Length: 500
Image: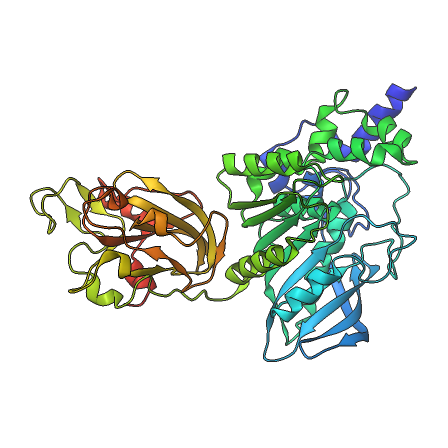
């Protein structure tokens, strides 16, 4: 009887019980129930593939009252419709000249019996609003003034319903066309359970948001979350009757797990975790970081030694990094500045793209051959290398500080250029005088270090100069020269970016 019920339940919830994942599942409409275009208030099938296909409508954003006001922003009580369900929440809208980019918060688990409107992440709401972001914190269905979920199945859904409410919060703001809110540039910040909600959205609707901040997120494997928390609740037996365990039915649990389809993530991710977190094991975030790195996704992972599930000693650093990350990815344009004073005067030997051989090189003797992937900035008369400061050309995280053959000291930064993730490489630096550290977030014009001394280990035996290169994508590329001119398309001419 149990096996029969399980089989029937799976066919209803998963749709033909076909293996998952399949790229076609995310790209092709379902030909079975529900009918195309039907507005579901709960997912008819419990899978992320179905969530990706669902028609989601957010509408009727309404400001129901002012909760607080200060010199930086106004805190509003709001409601909106999520596939016709009424959902409550709050919005912090900065004062001054907008529009301000939108950051939607997905909060962690709080018992609905004690939850109140806008509860959870209040410090974070305040901080980002003061930094010039419009903040929307959704309560989710079943919380505060929201309608209850109409789902009566009592089967774990890996928070897909909450994901519907987050997506529809964005849709509702876009439909409302608020003059003070830039809803075309959106970030999502998810804490704990909300981090899982954010991941579900990132893998199923990759074009919805421009950046994700994951704050001690739950596991990307739905079974791990069920086993740790939901299996202890009243709905345990119903879930296991319908879905079985992971060992019994891996396809069902894979279908609910963002881990299975992390390859669909396209937006940059900033991941935070405390090593002393007793709620979410640090190993879970370690694993997520490793998986995204293996997929060459734009992931920055910050681990805080001794921090717990809600940060305290490192909270200020956490928020400064978060604001810088969101600013880099949600602003229409990202200002780039020259990495060195009097930059245009210094390009006298090796500009971007020049073809170099030992015979034609303006630098003799020459040990390199190929097309130059960056721009070299030379010493000016009377300068000494250690007196020449190198500064960040852009806003973004430091992702490498190391010694590299052919360069000596190198710092690499991950930045945004016209909405695209790029890496900025600063080569031939005095490594022991570098003023930045790995994972540090830099603003444009922050000091990085100084030039290395000529013919020394600091420059790997090269002359004193700065090699500055900008490479498309998230992967760090150390090549200073490439053999084919067509390969230069993977780099950008720094002088064009700097308008010099």
